[in-house]
Structures are given as structure tokens and as C-alpha cells.
Length: 204
Image (cartoon, rainbow, N blue to C red; front, side, top):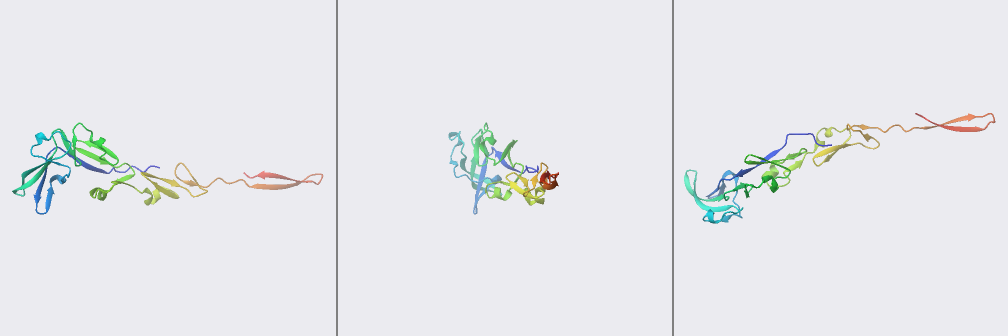
């Protein structure tokens, strides 16, 4: 039995082609638009001599931050590439072909939408801490025994009902008792010769 359809959980991976700016302060780096510095980025002076590449380009610069010009590091992708989930991806590549999503993937404008299938829910805390899986199974049996009459067994992405022996599970999920077993009835009769015979009858 599949899980009932529920609102599909979504989380978004932003697709950006703009430059990423990291401003240096006493406490470290502040990542604009929630991006982080990439240890695999290329230190460059002139992007024209380094492109094309699918690696992030890292350049030292001066940035205007909080009313002042401060040293900063600019991270950007080469022309024709976009920044998706920490990587530079060529614009001709379908982001959903990159296994960025755990279950389902959809591109909507400049966003990659990752969705969880019915029977799963998005675990926001796992996503924030980068702990997989992000889509976790819903235990339908935890609420009203899953609607089952006797036993409810949780499956990945769904559940099914079961019945204790000798009950049988019907197509509508109910448990019905087995049909009655016919009982043997012995009837004694006498003949003219005084012989005793027995006949066996089955009750209906």
C-alpha cells in the first residue's frame, strides 16, 4: 500500500552566473548570498587567460562593504558557465543530469528544485548540516495505525497492513476470519439384519 499523497517537500539550489564576493574581516570570511569559498578554486590574475574551465576562478580585489572598501576575494565562473551547488556548470548541461538531488529534480527558471517523493519528507536539519539522507521516510503507521485494522508495517515510501493468523487480509485492508471448517457428524443406523452401519455427514 502506497503512502497517501501529501504536499511535496521542496528545497532549492540556486543557479547564479554572477560573481561571488567574499569579504575579509577579523572573524573570517562573510559569504555573500550564502556561498562559501572553494578550496579547489583557481587563483588567477586575469580570467581571460584561465577560461574556459569548470573550476571557480578566485581573484583578490577591493570590495565596498559596510560603508568601507575592504580587501576581498571574488569567485566567479567563466563566461558560458553558471554556479550551481558549488560548481561551475556549462549552460548547455541539464542540471538535473548531475545527480544534485537525492530523489526528484526539476529546473524552474534559475532554480533547481529538489523534491521528495510521496511517502518521504524533507529533513531541513539534515540539509543544513549536510547529513544525508535529506528525504527521510514517513512512518505512516505512527498515526492511527496507518488505518489498518490489525498490524501496520512501514515500508520505504509507503506501508502495508497485515493480519494475525488465522485472519486473512481483504482487498480493502480489513481482516476477516477464516471460513468455518465443516464438522464430521456420525449417524448410527440399524438394518433388518441388525448390522450396525455408520454414515458420515458433513455439516454445511
